[in-house]
Image (tube, rainbow, N blue to C red; front, side, top):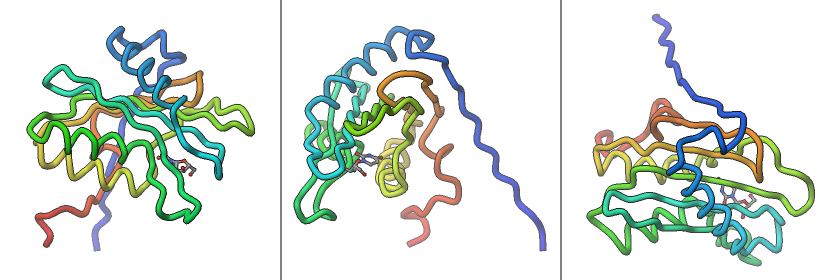
Length: 160
Ligand code: THU
């Protein structure tokens, strides 16, 4: 038996104003997207903005459904839209913001496990890391240099 240690490193910014200007602009687009969330059941609004290597910004928000599992997270709404509209573009940066309508959301909200798996497909396919930034409605912002940094021991097509 041997033990394997996997390390993840993140950067934590005190506020969005500490991040590079292009990240502030991308997060602003994510905030706008968040305001378009359809989340009448959870009251938890999530917005995502993607910066692509063709200079386009694609946004998404969570879209819920009375049949709960039929809804979709903001991250997957955004990446599937990007994949459908710009199949050859690489996703370089992803900004995520979330705000509950029921209580303040002041800590950074990372993508859920299912979204990490979905985003990993794109990162592996494009062979370029997706730089991720996530925050609540305000406050600290966490940066991960890639999706794989967020999802150790990933399951991917090489295992099929
Ligand atoms: N949600 C997202 O959009 N992204 C995540 O990574 C976490 C959860 C949405 C799904 C659902 O509409 C609501 O937030 C509560 O889970």
